[in-house]
Length: 432
Image (cartoon, rainbow, N blue to C red; front, side):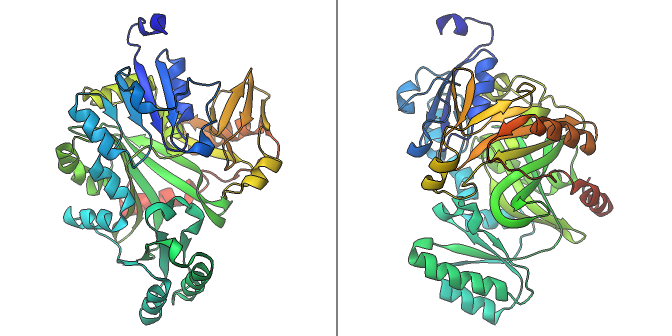
């Protein structure tokens, strides 16, 4: 380890992870020559990463060792603030940016304070109260859990009935199955348009150009059919100039500078001919967004993240064209069912027929030269592709997927297809 640190530019990097989602990033920085230590907070996920990167059981004992500390999820903002005040280079959130993501009402209030359009939404603490609201104000709504429940992505529901009758049926079902344990949730008016997100890195003073435009594919099956999963894959590109950035993220620059934020911020939006309507913040790495972004970033990630945390980086180097990525999942994804996972997926081998280029480890461990599925939810790998056109990027990604053998694996076959139609609309509305 000591010899490694003597290499020019090599850093000691401590990765503090909530679920182990950032394994691919930690492994990439290890391969760049940095000394890594990887901590996972969630106990059932702690086997993730064994054999790939050195693991630690208590991250706080290694703070003095680290040249750079990276927090990969929300909830660590207050800790990150204290470490920055003590002089440590930290990449991650702040107490303020954590609240932007975790408290949906606060996020909407901040959007309004920055003179950004918002979609009407209401917070509820009981299902009966929400049902009465929909019956009194019939419309199409989106049900968005808040607090810890929002981590269960399959509970998010996008209503299609213009009178909200499908939402009422869902709320009654949730009341029977969850009762008071569901916690608070939000009903947001459904607005039709193109779903798109704009994101960028922030160095404590300003956003780094270029900016990232992402199109998420959240449903389990192609053509947006089935249960919400959080995400099955994304397509994206980088741009130095974006009307969407100017109308949303850019307005938060002064507030983020006051908070000394040094990390990554994403705003997911619905856009149409009437304007931009932000839906929610992600004030951390997005998953799988960061892995697909990495496919488009043409410089070492350790050097980039250290520069952002230290406040010395003002730009980043990216590819022209498009990047796409798709998860290969196994049972019980997107659900958490230990019995099913143990029966069908635990310790299953990921087999590569043409090498591992563009293959990003997710919930895996490495034993010898074999990648084995671990954790408890069933995300095996994320496969990426790049190209000057969206079709080129898709072709590369799906060729790579075809060379990966994962027993009982499944993935979406249409990641990036939306671009053909969405791009025409975005051009006509002036967002590209």
